[in-house]
Image (cartoon, rainbow, N blue to C red; front, side, top):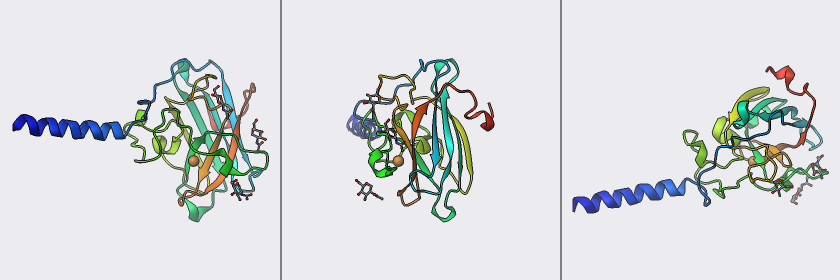
Length: 193
Ligand SMILES: *[C@@H]1O[C@H](CO)[C@@H](O)[C@H](O)[C@H]1NC(C)=O
Ligand SMILES: *[C@@H]1O[C@H](CO)[C@@H](O)[C@H](O)[C@H]1NC(C)=O
Ligand SMILES: *[C@@H]1O[C@H](CO)[C@@H](O)[C@H](O)[C@H]1NC(C)=O
Ligand SMILES: [Cu+2]
């Protein structure tokens, strides 16, 4: 009887864990991001939105994860807090954020249940605000290292050819921008080292 209760409980607990991770398992930490790799996404109103600013993504120290620096301005004050994600596709030339499709989700986790910040390996790789907090307007700065995002081309977690999307609290897409590779040192230097 005791054993049965315990095993039922264990089974339920396992089920709960399984539900929180991707169909392909937990996200793997990326330990080999190329030294010096740097990608920038610039919000410049080409998507028809008031938001301006930039996101600078560089390989983390020793290749571990990706260091993100964000400076985002002119966020519409009544519409926050603002989630932001790496999305699967780039922004089309007409700037329509809808066509960036869904989040970068190489482990096929899906959006529900919501990301648990305490267990970032179980979240969608692209769910940056789920793992690291939402933006608060009208001007937001943020810096963090994400262990699961990749600047190594050829793997699913690579986002250098994709985009970043900012959402209002009703989840509508208020701004989006492509990542582009840069060799220059200055983008992001004004955001601190
Ligand atoms: C984003 O990148 C894609 C692929 O390189 C390109 O076709 C598109 O025009 C770019 N979008 C914008 C808004 O520059
Ligand atoms: C953006 O693209 C979506 C999907 O193709 C479309 O439904 C929507 O009308 C477009 N928005 C604008 C402003 O063109
Ligand atoms: C981006 O690059 C990855 C890996 O290099 C590739 O699998 C993916 O299809 C590319 N995505 C787009 C939108 O080009
Ligand atoms: Cu999104």
